[in-house]
Image 1 (cartoon, one colour):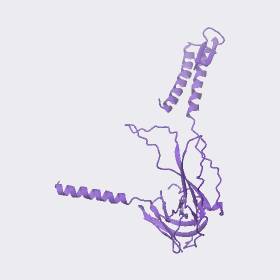
Image 2 (cartoon, helix red, strand yellow):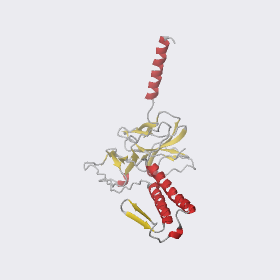
Image 3 (cartoon, chains in turn purple, brown):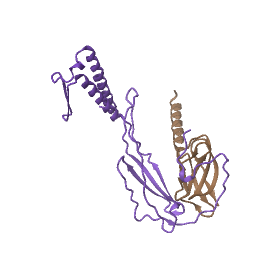
Image 4 (cartoon, chains in turn brown, red):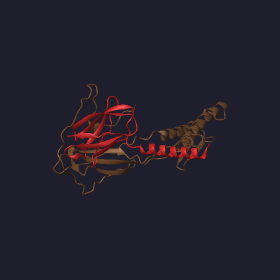
Amino acid sequence: MPFNVAIYVSLFCAIVMIVGGIWLLAKGAIKLSEAGKTEGGLSVELFNKIKLNTGYPALAFFIIGLFFIALAIWFSKPADVVSLSIDGKLNIEGGRSDDLTVKVVPNNDIGVTLRPDSDGDLTRTLHPEFELQFVINAAGYNPDGYRKTVTITRGKPLRIDLPKNLKFTKVIAAPPEGKIIPLPANVTPPPVQEAKGFKQL
Amino acid sequence: MNPRLFIFLVAMAVTVCGSARAQTGPPIHGQVVSQTRGPLSGVTVSLVHPTLGRNTPAFSQANGYYFFTNVPPGQTYYIEAYWGDKLLYRGTVNYGGGSVTYNIPLP
């Protein structure tokens, strides 16, 4: 059964229980005045663990209905946004560590292919595992970059070990400046190290 | 339809499709080349647009080659090359669509 359908069924059950309770009260099939009587009380057992005995049969419908509503709300709450914390240490022997940059890009080669049904409806809840590519770059050092692709799974810490023989060696000093045309006064882009991509058009 | 004409049209269609497929490459790509040092690796190359901001930078590879993906067409961009955080070059590139080669010359 699709997950969303289970939530809708829970909500439907809750509404039926509450509206049914009101209807039974209105018809006189159950009465609030019968509170406290042992016979005619309601006994409900849930999942063989929770046993509910009540001498208030009218209220039992509302309590069970509220339980279903709470269940539906709990399971329909939005999932947390996946965040990724990176904590590490990178050094260059004989160089400045701020010569290094680490670029993290999603690996676009993997993904989930979704197909709508014959009516064109598309309903799917994804619990994605996705791949990220870490690119370590050092201007003027060899090798010119190191790439590592990792699979991120939600809730699982990930350790990225760099090869022990990975060594950045300085090869050339900074090249001289070439042509630099000025930017218009009203254009103030963020520093290149803080670029987060183009805004949406 | 004349069979010869039909074969000719099919051949033309295959050729045109093949040409169009061959032209699909990175939207903007090129090489960072120093006149004195040759191709430069590890150079950070970035596009700047007055309203779209700055894109995610690319890094030149061992042969100086760099490329960008996901560049909105029909815009003029400033293209910048950095050595670490030092600006080495800034020029302009008009990107109308397709695949554009832009080499970055340095002294």
